[in-house]
Structures are given as C-alpha cells and as structure tokens.
Amino acid sequence: MTPPSLLTALLPLMADLAQDLPEAERHRRLLQTLRALLPCDATAMLRLEGEWLVPLAVDGLSRDTLGRRFRAGEHPRFAQLLEAPGPVRFAADCGLPDPFDGLVEGVQGHLPVHDCMGCALRVDGRPWGLLTLDALEVGRFSRVELDVLQAFASLAAATVVVAARMDGLAARVEDERLRADSYARAGGQAPRQLIGHGAAHKRLLREIALAGPSELCVLIQGETGVGKELVAQALHAASPRAKRPLVSINCAALPDNLVESELFGHVRGAFTGAVTDRRGKFELADGGTLFLDEVAELPLPVQAKLLRALQNGQIQRLGSDREHRVDVRVIAASNRNLAEEVRAGRLRADFYHRLSVYPLQVPPLRERGRDVLPIGGFFLEEARVRMGLGGVRLDAGAQAALLAYDWPGNVRELEHLLGRSVLKALGRHAQRPRILTLSAEDLGLASPAAAAPKIEPAAASPGGDAAGAQAGLREAVAQFERTMVEQALERHGFSWAAAARALQVDPANLARTAKRLGVARR
Image 1 (cartoon, rainbow, N blue to C red):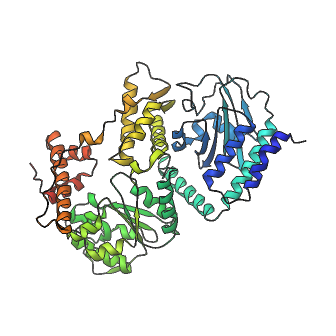
Image 2: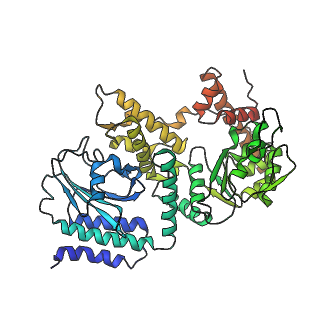
C-alpha cells in the first residue's frame, strides 16, 4: 500500500498536470516536492540534449549551475544513471567524481564524503534526463526505498510529457535539438545558447518566438557584445527554414572592393584574381537564412544593390549580366542607431526601412539582473574543460562583484573576464587544485566610470532649441568615440590591431570608425 507521505507529496503534482504552468515553475515545484519527500541538501533536474546534460532546475546548488553543460560521457555517475533501468544509490565512499563537486551551496571547496542517488527520467522508453540528489550526511539515503524515487521519477516523466504537449513547446524543443546536433557534429563542443531566467530574457524569448516562424526581415539592435548572433541563430532555429543553412557574414570585416563579390558572387575574370566562378552568400543561403552582422558598415552603392535582392530575390554575380533568383530570409544586426545613421546620410532610408520590418532590441547585460550568474556558469564550464580542471566555482564575493558590475562590454566582456580570471587564479596555486575557487580579487573588476575618458560638455546652441541639443549630443558622442580611439592607439604604440583588441572591435570596423571620426593614421 502506498505510504501516506508519498501520496500526500504526489497529489499536488498530479493536480499540476492539468494546469498550464510555465516550464520553469513546473520544474521548481517538482524539485520542491522531491526535497520534501526525500530530505537532501541539493537536487537537480537535467535534460538530455544529444550527448549533453542541461540543468533545467536546481535546489541547493549554486545558481551558476544553470548555465553549465555536462557531457554525459565525461561524468561516470551521470552515465551510470542514464544506463541503469531504475534508481541508483551510490556508496558514500564511491570513487567516481561528483559532477556537482564545488557547486553545493554551503560547502567551500571539495565535497567531503557524502550520500548521492539519482535516476533517469524516461519518455517513450528512452532517457529524457536525470534527477539527482546529494546529502552531506553520510548514510542519510540508506533507509530510503528506491521504489519511492522510482514512483516520483515516473510522475516527473509524466509531467515532462504534458509540458511537451503545450502549445509551441514541442516545436521549440525540436529546434533546440536540431541546433545542438548540428553544433555537436561541427565541433564536439557545447553549443552556445541564449541563457537566462530574468524578465528581460523572457521578453526577448517571446519576441523570438513571435518573429522566428515568420518570413519577415528582422533587424537586431543592441550594444556590442550582447549576443546578437545568438539571437539570429535562435530566430533561424524557430523558423520553417531551420533545416536549411544559416549563412553569416560580418559586413565590417569586408574590404570595400570585395563586398559585392562576397554577397553576390563573381564570374571568372570579373577582377584580378577571379580565376573561377564563385557563388556569393545569397546563393549559399538559398532556402535558408542570411545573417548580415554590422550591416551599417556596408557602403552606400552596395546598399542599393542589396535593396533589390531584399525586395524581389534577384541577384547578379559581379562581372555577369545574368540574373539569379534566390529564396533567402535576411536577418540583420547592428550596434548603431540606424535611424541616426539615415539622418547622417551614412545609410539609405529605403534600405533601413526594408531591413527593419521587425525591429528587435537585445537588452544589455547590466539590465538582466541575476542572469549574469548562469551566463557566467556557462563560460566557467567552458574554461574548466579547456584547462582540464575538476571544477571551477565562484565564491560569494565573486558572485556579488559580478552582480554589482556595470558590464560596458556585455556578455563578451563577461566571457573574456572569466577566462582571464581562471588563468590568474591558477597562478596563485603552487599545485594545480582539483576545484578552483574564484574570488572577487581574481576578477579584478573596477568601476567602468573610473576608466572612461572625461568628455567636456558640448556648448549649448544659441537658440537652445531641440535641433541644437541633438547636434550637441551627436558631437559629444563623436568626441567620446574619438577620444577612446586615440587613447587606445597611444597606449598600444599606434598598432591598429592591438588597439582593436583592446576596444573589443574588429580591426576593419576600427579603421572605418577612425576614418569617420577623422583620426589620422601614423
């Protein structure tokens, strides 16, 4: 007969099956009930995506765990749970490494001897994911009936099935699986994904879910380093073109004399060095999606030719009088205010309006609150694998420093900072530690305002009207950019490549910006 405690715990979850709950809330309730039923210090629910296990919800583990990705083959405990027909209780002195070593809240450094158990969640007879439980007290799970965990896992699997049948969820899961498979085949590394749980991130996902399945041209705008390319990949994955290619091109990295050839292709003899016919990006993306990054850097004559391709799908290879018709959806991105670029005459108005059929703004990292921790967890896991470490964790001071920082360089700055900090922290140890703990000192975060050059305020216009104020703002922004570029060049001995790295921009982009600002080469 079912124990009353088990029945009492499972009844609310059974009632939840009939409710249309958000995915995150459904997972939270599952883990909350699991901890009430089987008291433990940490528990996690992970979904299997290809060969990677992705944490969906955690309780008792550091929040940055949600941003990590675990390759099942690299973690023997996970692999054993996936292969076992039922729940597994590991011996307290089990020699297999614990994947959550260094991530349990309240434990500094290496996990002591502890109890661990878990089981696979199966849907249609195949492993869908895992439930794991850790207890710091040895022997706490010795009296636990494995049948209780199996009953809970069966209900959890049923919850998964119900959630998968909710409107739009099945399609999104399939898109994510296809993208993960393609990344795994390409490089064997965990795919980069949009990570987060905050309100700003959820708004962005809603926009992607709305615009992705359409054929509309999307203009992604946001500061440098916010992840515009990941948004473009998510839009492509959510579209009917997901099984066709996504072709990307960085417009800022193309010399002016090669832009047309890269976009539209060329025929043999079109220019010096054109020894064979060559297809351009539009033809390569036929049936799929073309992502134009830094689209504001395109020269005006190329914008006119692109406009024709956007309107009717007709392109013409350089040096040829024959027209080709392509079926391509275009997604563009820029870190500039394109409406201002139109007013300044650097962007055609008709080209801008054709690109911005569906404008999509990506929020900067400083507006995403606590999402900085799971995003940082993803980069720490990459660094752990790259450095061959057993684990990398953030102490409380480091987490507070990440949350307090303003992130002028956004997610890209976070990635570089954490990679650099892992290296610095390793240098503090005479012997390579199994679990590397990063402190606020290792991060070395300074106030961005302290490093920014001082800009004298622009003089007010004689009439004090709106036009004069706008002109003053434009001049102040231009002066700020000019000062940043000149100081970076001076610090690096007028090496343009080194200055571009310091400013976190492409060298070709820096050259164009310097030319626009009137910064002379030396």
